[in-house]
Length: 158
Image 1 (spheres, rainbow, N blue to C red):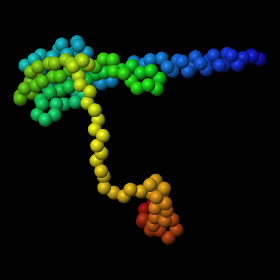
Image 2 (cartoon, rainbow, N blue to C red):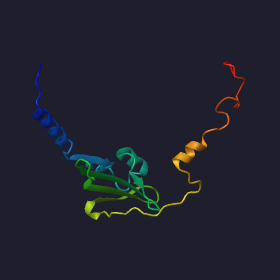
Image 3 (cartoon, rainbow, N blue to C red):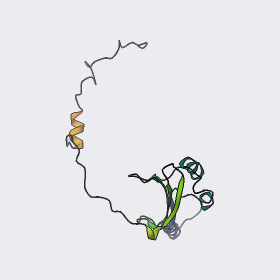
Image 4 (spheres, rainbow, N blue to C red):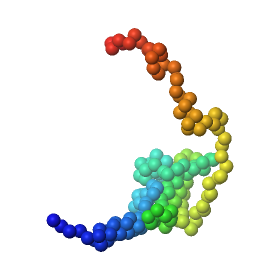
């Protein structure tokens, strides 16, 4: 029989734990490759052809901004720590009123701005019951036992 020492087991556990702390590279978003972007022709491509070449954008322009935005980020993460954004690129495609491609902009992380989430909350109407109150309230609901309503005749062929 193989004899496994405590030192070997402890060393193996340490190795497994350290392995989980190795930094991981995470890629998020939908940033098209430069080769695909180079296929676009200003003044000729429409929103439809751009979507066919590059795929659906990450988001569309709002408030009358006739644009497509493609956003991609490369994050690094170590163990349980918050991820760090290493690279971020935004491809903005502007269209004119007839939906023809007008301009192409590329932004990087230095040109972006962090937008903080609002701490305000929207109040919702309704009762404020605890989990226990909701659980107790459901006991004795009609139709859940003997004497409750039966839907149909109760026969199998109904």
